[in-house]
Image 1: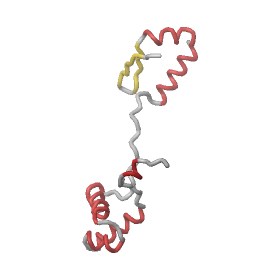
Image 2 (image 1 turned 180 degrees about the vertical axis):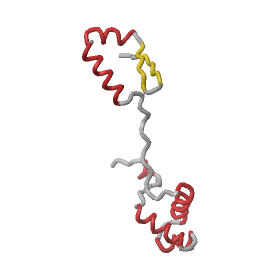
Image 3 (image 1 turned 45 degrees about the vertical axis):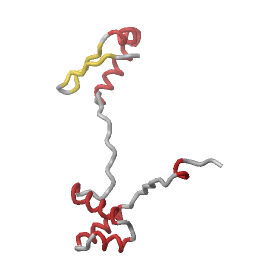
Image 4 (image 1 turned 30 degrees about the vertical axis):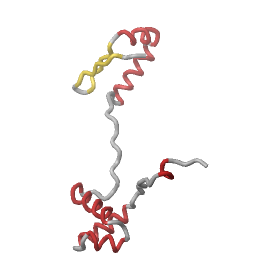
Length: 117
C-alpha cells in the first residue's frame, strides 16, 4: 500500500470557491452582517469568509484573477520580419545568426540580443 505525504500528515486541501458563493458572502456583508454571522449562514469558516470580504474590499474583485502573461520581446510584425529575412536569405542566415547580434527596431526601441543556437 503506497502512502502519499497527504495520507501521512494532515494536509491543507485548498478547494476552489465558486464565484456565486463569493457574491453571496459579499451580499451578506453589504447587508450589514458580521463575519461570524455570515460564516454561520453559509456554513464556512470565519477565515474563509474574512478572506473573501478582505479581497473584495481591497481589490474590488470577486472573480478569480487571470494569470499574468509573459512579456513578449518581439511583436507580431517583428516575427514576420524575421521569418521573411530567414526565407529570403536562408543559406547565409544560419551561418551569420550565430556570430552576429540581432538588432530589430520594435516601435521606438532598438532590441539587440545575441542569438544562441
